[in-house]
Length: 133
Image (cartoon, rainbow, N blue to C red; front, side, top):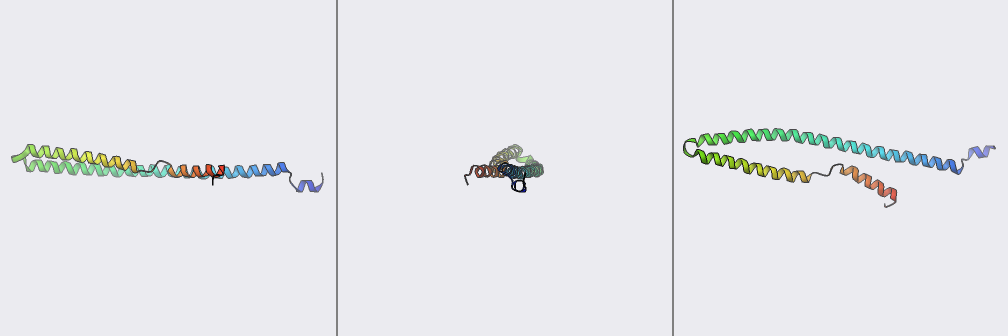
């Protein structure tokens, strides 16, 4: 072998280097997407836990407050209109629960789709690899 052949890599060596660099780039892209995925999952879990805890506190406080207000109204009207007060308090609770269920359903539909940013980035990656950009 002469010194010239070892200094200049052949086409097979260039192809191997290119494939190695491409593999490294693809692994870096996959790593970035997996990190984005795990970040999104942890944010969604944290948001969900916070929502549940504060929701529980709000529901318990509201139920206790409304229950005590209802009992107070019934006691206040005990001698004159006890049945009307009891029916009114019950109707108010039913209406309030229906409104709360409607608002909760509306809020549930407003939430962004799970892993939306990850899916968008993966879609961009696929488009870039296909040459759609």
